[in-house]
Length: 336
Image 1 (cartoon, rainbow, N blue to C red):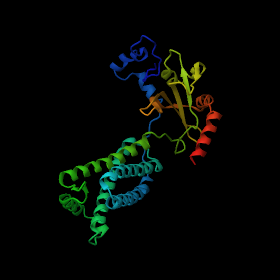
Image 2 (cartoon, rainbow, N blue to C red; image 1 turned 60 degrees about the vertical axis):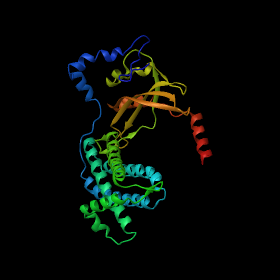
Image 3 (cartoon, one colour; image 1 turned 135 degrees about the horizontal axis):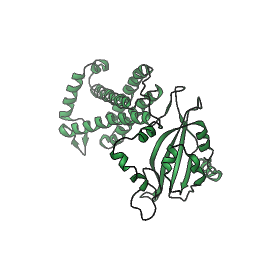
């Protein structure tokens, strides 16, 4: 069995990882010099926010309003609303979150905390745009109303929402949904839209690596190293210490292996001078339908390495076996 924290093999008869136990005293005494130096070996965002975001924000607002209008139109005019809307709302929330996240990414924002605030603000704007669009489409079925005047009157938007809530506007199994029940649904809808925007914005920024040398996001290397490591030495510590001699002690993982390690790398494809490395523990198992699934556990992420170490690691990364590649092509053709 492998330790999820440090990647060390736990021998039979051991109830805990001795490698981790040795560090317990250091954790109890606070942050040590070694831990501080190790922290500096990993990539972290600079915290910078690009001025180009001033251009991206108006575009994002326009996109949010258009998505809100489409969403509101579908909500009002699609039959069997009460059932299908449970699919439409999450899709709309993810769409808003994707638009927010891609805006931060394209504008090269390198601040994870700001991404949360930005996603929250985008979610609120999208939610308000949804209400304005919904009321505009709903009211225009019988009366003419100006979209811009309605959007500029948040108090009026709230009053209209209260009136709609009193009588309801749709039924489920011939029972009108109104009052408290409708407000609960609207509350859940609002929570989903805002939280979806926050989540996607944070993921886009926090999981990306930026090269400050040339001002571009790095890309994942197209190969990965799947291997088994049987030495008693802590694999995590060796990698953090840039000791890559462990490559002489590994064996290539096979498709039949249920537990192994995986190393992935990122590189700046522009300057070719910035590289990171991540280590995972992979566990294979079957889901309830009997299909094979991989569980990926982070041991550490985005360790800074130089070009020499990058080439040393990637030199051991093997391309997809020819037989698997041929199977993939054959499956793609049959699916087409």
